[in-house]
Length: 265
Image 1 (cartoon, rainbow, N blue to C red):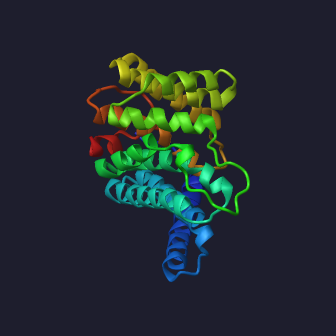
Image 2 (cartoon, helix red, strand yellow; image 1 turned 90 degrees about the vertical axis):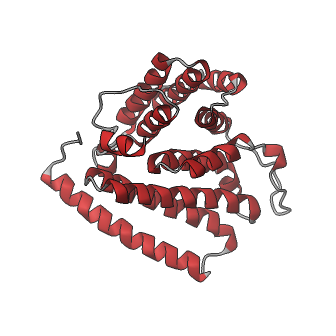
């Protein structure tokens, strides 16, 4: 079951795929040729990862599942590289602060390509994150820190993957989430429910976490963005992680492509 796109939307999808594939080659060439400045490499790697993620979603819609998984794997590799280089080079402060989000996106796409090593590597790196241990750079005058919502959300997701959920991480995210509203509140609630479900082996909580993430996608998606009309990436990733951890939950949604999930689990 896939979303029913109009003829105009399908044409836009084909155009988008061609554009993204061309962009991938150009970005790879720039990175491999050494023309990207060192401090810009984390951002360039992050952008390349996102482009691979987009093409993977298009391939899912086209039922090219093997190719979709390949592009999700490339995306995961580049997200991990982006996080690694953000630690090592003199990049912009916001690039350091993006590390938890970068690694979280790496977890999502590595789950969707079915590469356990990549998924577990990204998750271990998240659990090891400690703002106090980030490298100091003389040119940065203010302390390096992480956005607390993304930091604890990443910890909850990584703990769910590795079946090492920490109650403290869930509690901190719940506290942070109380001050949010709208889609951002839904996202945080989805993660706390999902992580709690893993922690106490509760399939009802797990399923509710996936369903809330689907609601988040529905609230966030925009009709002008054809990628949003194909797949709820975060919800599909959570569903896949649950299945990989041995929980046979199902959700009734065209935005969590069963052919992709079934190919992985």
